[in-house]
Length: 193
Image 1 (tube, one colour):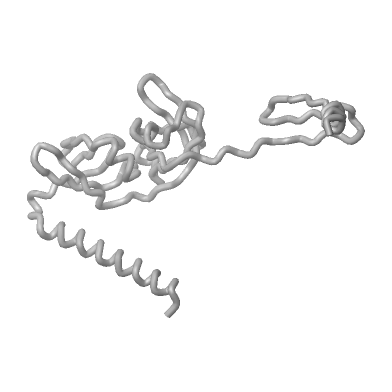
Image 2: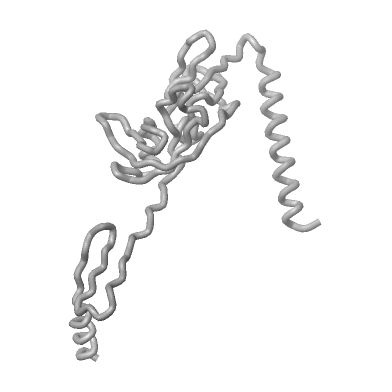
């Protein structure tokens, strides 16, 4: 067996073990004690309408999007959550804005709020291009939130070469025109040598 085949098999086994552990945890906890709900961007909401604040750092790290299923694990005074179901998601790119205290990503699909914890983690700022996940059915469920997954690569600068025979060379970079007298510069460089 090749090394890549062995590594692939190990990953499959690890996934199975993880799934079995999660199943065992669910079966060990009595059904009446399980509190399950749907993430709305900030809260887990149960079928009964009870709302539980999801820690922003956990939601950010787990890249939760509206529609994801969570289970509440009550441990003393602090609530913990387990991500037990992912809704279909779509990755897109947008530009980051700030409106008051809210961070907003504007993309071709619309406007989506982004958790401040994600902005801090990725060291993003107003005007940055970001990548984010949104639910596939964002329109059907009226999703207002997205999950930032990283910074988007900036498009390369557009450079136009000058026409042959011109004395001055103009380069257009990101819409700004910079004029350089290349002949003068070359002349100076030659004289310095």
